[in-house]
Length: 420
Image 1 (cartoon, rainbow, N blue to C red):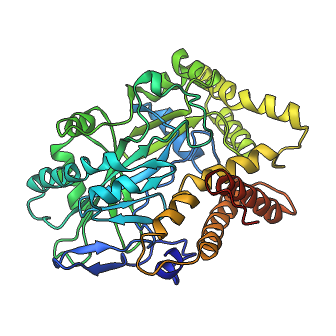
Image 2: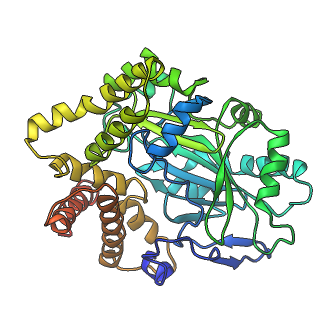
Image 3: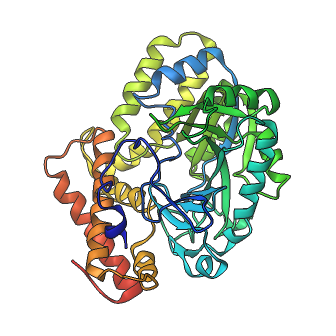
């Protein structure tokens, strides 16, 4: 299944020049199951990282109003107005029937609830097309967090989602994407952004992609109201206040320090950042970024901001470093496990792929599916390890060992079978 459909673009890291599309019987253009997902939600960097330090410095100086949403600990899903569904990295279903959605499990949970959501994405597209009268070929992408049993990183509901009415097997939208096919005679994403901004007070990010361009919009109260009018649930919006207030308000700081939430996403026009306790391998990067900010942000108005950033940044580091005794930049076992869990959350689970393969007209052998799955996740993990700036001379061997242990654990529990 996967090996047959994604052969040449299997390890492609860049945006290809054009979506892989095929004609359906109705003549409409559709994505291909198993192909690379070309419209990924852009990577959102932390408020403290070497990548985003210039951006957060600028935001702290300007102090704009930001929308604060809860960063739910689930898996990224995308629904298109053209009828296809994608995980973080791959197209997983195209024009699915209710029976297919009931049977298909993503990270262990049936996609049955998406049956009522797919037609609503078409309604979003219709409403936006009414505003964009000269851009009728637009495709709308609905991005959201898919809630599984527990969280993406553990089976325990450690953030008490159930108690707060955040339901397993539901998708909570955190943004939309707007794409105009290159074949359109009026393919000007800049004009689209300007026209939308004149009608909707949403948080518009930059245009993403290379030759394939699309506009990303983060959820704020205005977009939430628009989507709720179509009975579409969004991630919790906690506040819309100046960014310096967010970083110093005790309820936000303590929610992170006490680990009551995974984190927050702070978005405004042209920018989105996440605020969490440290992520795997980010200690050195966070310290460096914090040092830069402390050197450039002087005065009483920044003192509490910097203290709060340091408190959250150092909270988990103290516990982990005391337990491991590792020097900065040296990954701990927890770092490797976090990298492995993060990669796993971006693709369907292995057992779900094996089950789906049973319904394929020309099914692959289970070992071929396992091989392809291992290769996809290993490449993702290796990329994360490099991006995080971790240093370990035998990291490839350790990553593969952790990955194979995870695969064995999963297949032993669900299939009573080990592959490594």
